[in-house]
Length: 99
Image (cartoon, rainbow, N blue to C red; front, top):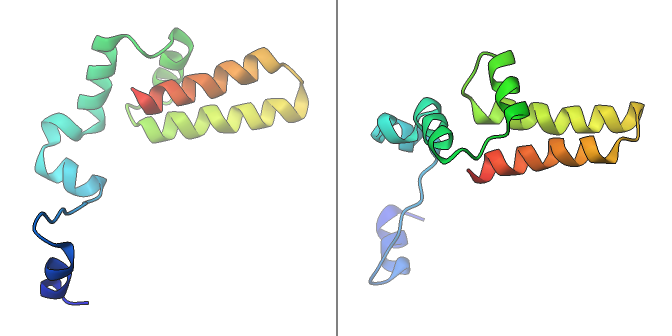
């Protein structure tokens, strides 16, 4: 489909969805990991334990921390059935994603 065909099919009010890379390139002061991280700090939505993960990896990259929390939960469940800890790891990952 050509761009003109796509516009015609979209109707009177077309929308364009672009990926994360475009958002960061357009507005790095808003969409960079550092800016998003700072906003989460203002909202105080990241747990103290999750903050230690950010510091431990020396990153503000949400994807690294979310993946690490989810992976840790899976590894711990294989070694020890600590449902409260697994729930906390999974919950922290969800809260960071939502924040």
